[in-house]
Amino acid sequence: MKIIDAHNHPDWHGHDLDKFLANMDQYGIAQTWLLSWECGYYEYDKGYAQVIPAEILGSTTGPVPFSRCVNYKERAPERFIIGYAPDPRRPNACEMLEAAHEIYGAKICGEFKVRMMMDDRDALWLFRQAGKLKMPVTLHLQEDLRKDVNPRQEWWGGSIDALERALQLCPETIFVGHAPGFWIHISGDDLYKTVNYPPVPCPVQPNGRLPQLLRQYPNLYCDWSAGSGCRALTRDPVFAKEFLFEFQDRFLYARDYFDNQHQDFLATLDLPTDVLEKIYFRNAERLLQEYK
Image 1 (tube, helix red, strand yellow):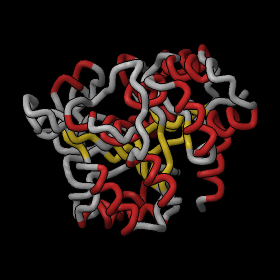
Image 2: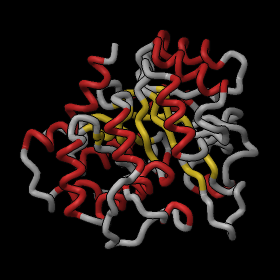
Image 3: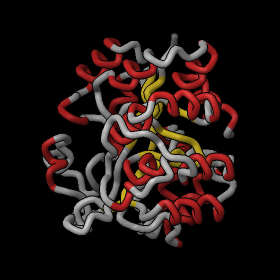
């Protein structure tokens, strides 16, 4: 079965192009959505320098410069679909997004990971431009509410309420949600106030904001990547199967890393082939083909 990884980054966690391609081959991944990450130097944890050498390479735009995505794409054009999300606070952010799309073939606006609310006016301008260009927006949502954690440490996009306001204000734009502040709301409990990642096992409670938003806003999709996405389903496998059946048309397989935990878990659910195909590649392909 064809597999598309809908979220990863160049040079991420010590993977240069050769290691990246070898890892894709190891796990049967045909293509990867290769995303930039642009934000102010003062905004991101300097621990990221241990997993990506952007500063060593002289990047002035943030942890994952778009130039590295272009570099990988030029050397392995059939394996990568590239994404770019300029910092919306740049006065020419919308023009830069259009240039990346028109000149370099960027098809995704992502990863949007900036220390600003999702419904900030500058962010909305960028999202509306992405909608005009038919580029889905891959977003990182994370709001750590723990009282003993410095809010400067990991704060991206604000609350789930800010995401809902962006969905309302940009109905022409497809948003692909990701990260702890997105996935913790799969459940109707109040764990989001005390943890980023729920324990496993941990039964999902009814009336989670995430299922509600998916039912209400057809422009919202799910990026299943990283530990936050995987744990959201592994915490309650019975609910996971119900969730995947209900939202099978808006769920994208993605990793944001180089292990195989997501495929391993899917293999335990005994899902029908047509549902697995949607998750693994058809939804990603359709999103880029139909959203034109």
